[in-house]
Image 1 (tube, rainbow, N blue to C red):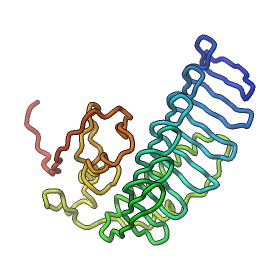
Image 2 (image 1 turned 120 degrees about the vertical axis):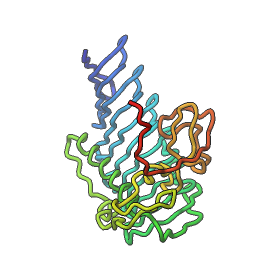
Image 3 (image 1 turned 90 degrees about the vertical axis):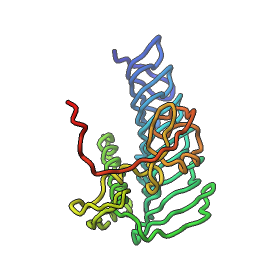
Image 4 (image 1 turned 180 degrees about the vertical axis):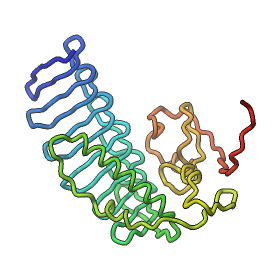
Length: 276
């Protein structure tokens, strides 16, 4: 049942339990900021969409009115998109930022870059490996043998995310795509034979999809080799997991009680065991 109620700072329409906002609903503040999503005991809790009058939008998870978990923040006037982990209402963990100067993906702490990351320049499409400390870059190394198809996939994912958020915004959000996203159309496609982990080649494909899938979801460079327990997610390399600021799985936010380092081997053998 949909209920309507007014407060001193806004109005609510949605589900209620024992006279409190609880379940799915929409809250419109007097400032015209809007939250649509899940409530628990009068607080934003769960998945929701928060939009500001300026056009800024956050789409993701909340925990007792605080952004926590996976979320996407779009700032139209600033020309940036962040997609990644949040903790205590700040960017903490691993995430991707698309800005006017390029695309950065790596580790964050207290809203600033902190730890290992990679940067794709929008100016010349050069790829850099960087280390950051509390928002200050401490080292940067040009990577000359980068896999451009991986970068193209990354930027395409960010563009797809942006398109999804724009469909949510019903009041005419205008947003100029950063140059880094527009530049993705100039990224070359790898059409040469691709080496597998066993050093074999496959000349009839443009890339080794299995090798791409097996890369770490944080650094996109090293193979994933770390099983997180008890959730058993195998999405990251052990080096990136060691640099995480929180002791929780980046994928599901479950507490990490243990880690198991393993070795994955890619093969092209499509044979089955013959069992029916």
